[in-house]
Image (cartoon, rainbow, N blue to C red):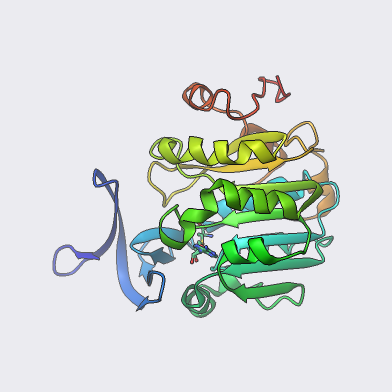
Length: 297
Ligand code: SAM
């Protein structure tokens, strides 16, 4: 954390040693070091409470709804009847909060490796972690790699809400993990994976999707805005054996669900899969192309 002038404090995220993202801070609420990472929670001036892991912004109260609505509602409105959901990571609780808004979901297993993140968010970000006591949720503090390798339980949707491929999260981006995930998914199953920045992380994005390719008939990527991530545009991978994110999406289904959102809607759902040309070119031959009508070309 850097101190600006005597009266102002800033939290600054340095990205690839070539750019910085800074947020004015009013006070530090928590600072600790777990076995896995540095965990900081700060009260910012204009972005609410903010969680940082190893100095990287994970989420802020101001914009977390975007990430959590897009990771959860896209797959849950494409899957015909999502009942059992697995979340890997997601220690702040925002993803499971959105998943549990779907009344048809009967069971969520959340596997977060770092209890310090969960405890900090329970205490300082109650709006985000509010669903962690839902009776449908089983919260496991363990390595997601180990859980996926050892469990025999099947899931309709698996959401990898992880940090970047560094340290304990690195194996969450490799072929062996995706092989294990494909084994756990039911026939209509869908995997969503945190797929980094289209601008700054192409060197991660392409290999991670190539690692998924052998196990999934359908492979796509979709985009969303994020105020607190470098470049302001982020992505999720969408992988499935059978389900196409647009052809199998009924735009009337979100309204019928009665789930109110602040970012996600049927138009955003469809538009998020329409990629800029530089991305289509970069991922040519890796993901399944969609034409302008959103149909698999
Ligand atoms: N949901 C937040 C957001 O809006 O972007 C950020 C993601 S969440 C904080 C990322 C979590 O992944 C961290 O809490 C980290 O501890 C967890 N994680 C990293 N590697 C993991 C692993 N191998 N198994 C389980 N959780 C892991």
